[in-house]
Length: 404
Image (cartoon, rainbow, N blue to C red; front, side, top):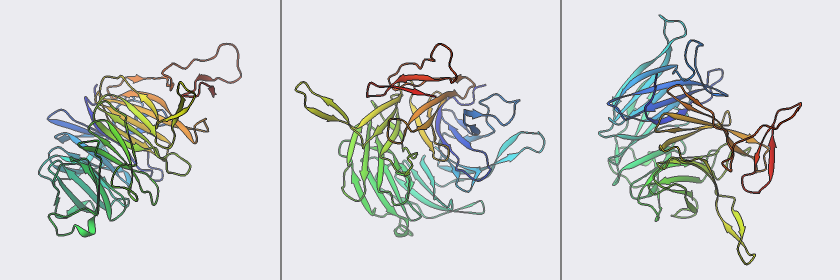
C-alpha cells in the first residue's frame, strides 16, 4: 500500500521524557492529502505493532488541500500542527483507538482558516504558546495557543510573497521571500498594525527570491542560512552586513530547504545541509576550504568544502530535518522516499560526519544505500577476523579509513 505519492514536508518531534520519537509527514499533489505520524527507531521507520508493515503510519488523517508545513508541539510528541494550501491551520493529537488494540488515530482539535491564500510556513515558539504563519500573498500572522484553542492577532501585510518564517526568540522572528530579502521582525511592534516595517533588512543581490531559511541552533546565535530560487545557499551574520557573508551555488535549481547541522559538541557549526529541485542533497562547511596547488605550485583556496550526500535520484528533495537529540537527520523526496543519516563522531573531520543509514520508501520498500563520500561502495574484508569492519576511501585527502 502506498502511503504517500509526494512528500511535501516532514519533521522530527521534540524529545519529551519517555514519549516515543516520531516524525510527521505531509503529502501534496491531490485534492485531499494526508498528514501521517510515524514512529522512528535507530534503524529508521518502525511500526507500532508486528502486524503492521515497516512503513505503516501510527496514525493518519486527511487534509483539505496540500500539506505545506507540519510542526510537533515542543510540549508533546503526541500533538502535531499542520498548515495547508487552503490557508488553514489544524491541530491534531495521537489517540489510542478504544475499539482496536494497538491502533491509533489522529483527533482533530481545531481546523481554522487564518489566511486567505496558501500558508507557506508554520513555526512554533520555544515554549509552544505562539505560532507564526506566513502566506504567499505577503501576509504574516502571530497566533496564541492556550488549552487547545487558537487566538489570532491581526495579520500584517508586506509588499511581496513570504516563503518561509522562523522564530528566533519569544519576540523576534525572520522571514524570507520574493525580492531576495531577509527580514527581521519584532512582534511587539506589530500589534494593531496592518502594515509595519522590519527591524532589519538584508538583501541577496545574486538571487531573485529566498525560498527557505535556518537559524543556527544555540543561545545567542547570530548566523542564518538561506536557500534561493537559483540554487544559492547563503550564510548571513546579522551583526555585520546587509548582504551575505558568503554564498555558494549548491544546486542546479530551486533550494527547497536548508538546515544547520546541530551535532557539534559546542552545538553551533557553520555547516549546512540543503536539498533542492535538482534531486541533490548537499552538505556545505563554510568554515573549511579545499586547497589545491595550481600549475605553478601556488596553493589556492577553493571553497567552501562541499559534499554531495545524494544526487541523481531524478526527483526533487523537498525537505531536510535534524534531530539533535539522537544525532540523526532525514531528507524527504517528491517520490515518497525518506533517507536517514546519522552523525558519526571521532572521524578525521573535526567533530564528525553524516553517514547514510537507509533510504525508506513510504510505499513499503526499504532501499539500503551504502554510503561513500567518493561515490563508491563499501566492501567487507575477506578472511577470518575477530571483529567485522567495513572500509572506504577518504572524502578528500586520499587516505584510507577503517570503521568498525
